Amino acid sequence: MHLLRQFGRRKVRTALTVFGITIGIWSLVVFSAMANKIDSLVSGGSAYYAGKIIVSGTAAGGYGALPMRLSDVDKVAAVPGVDVAVPQVQLFTETDVRVSFGVPSQTIGQVAGADRGRETVHVGLAQGRDLSAADEGADVVVLGTDLASKLHAGIGDAIELHGVPFTVVGILAPTLTTPDNNAFVPLRAAQQLVYDDLPDVVRSAVRPEELASQVIVYPAPGVVPAELADRIEASVPQTTTLTGDEFDRQVGASVSILNAILVGVALISLVVGGLSVINTMAMSVAERTREIGVKRAIGSPRLRIIRELVVEAGVIGLVGGLIGLAFGVLVVVLADEAGRSSGTVLFEMRPSTAVFAVAFATILGVVAGVVPAINAARLDPVDALRYE
Image 1 (cartoon, one colour):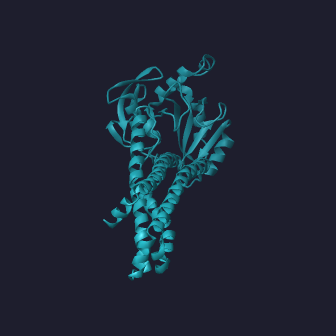
Image 2 (cartoon, one colour):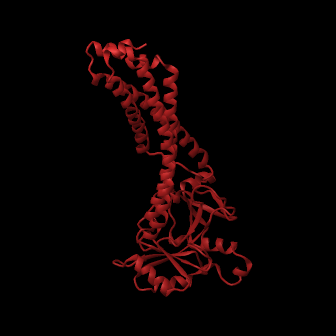
Image 3 (cartoon, helix red, strand yellow):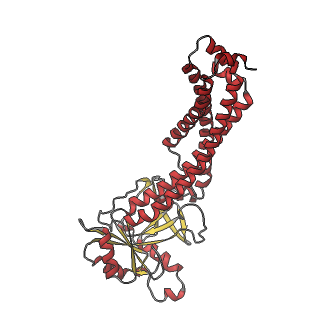
């Protein structure tokens, strides 16, 4: 009640201070949720690339680029140290890929079970079944949860991939990472899709069943992936490799910088909010100088004066933090729901983000109130009583 009376004496100033904290926490929550999403995508990529080598052709420039021939898979498999070599085909799910935040949806084809149990990243099913080796030759698809939502597709429905109808046989459980927005089809079906999109001059030189985008290599037990990658590049012409460690180095550093920028922008807003708390508490001390003098004259200890003012500042930070968190969560939820239909989920809200935001706002308020509180406690009772 005492705190409410104090806040009521300066409603506008307190409201503006709370608003300043709210804006800072709101930006912290939104940018942190965006950083969380980026972190999840990178973590998913790190888990996928760990312990394996991605081999791609260099003729078309880049990982997963075409063309590669399945004959290259036999050459890669023959390199000493290779345990399993799995051909894979990747292509964009949409023919008109637009530049946007996030990873574009991809259609991925490979023979189910070709990894011989070496794959360690497994995504559960929310509905239906997974692909099997018996599906080779059939136009069936397993969809990521976000892609299924975007296409409004359920088990048994027919969807089109590059103009070809596919029957949905499974929908993956949410992972909050790249598979949520991908489509998974048998290898032969993916090869045909790629073949149909090739220029006529290229199609005349290859058959659909000869095509691959990349080779997933699982090293034999005890083999160092980096050393095996070097042997593959030396043994198989016009190939380039990517190991898990290389992925972490290339992507991890860039993401760390991006996340630092996002959180840094939010922290700047919070610093501004903290300065407004300092200003409010300093004005409060000035307005209550006589009141503080009376408390000191009747024997109120300095520590009690400091505690009252610091608690008051902490409550301002807490209230601003809670309101900012509420607005931040609202923006994140609405933005994700609006983007889910198009497969663009930009944010990931975590409990740790909410706890950190509220705790940070409260601590910021407490710290901002310490200096004015100490100055108030140091006031001479006689001088304070004479203050006009």
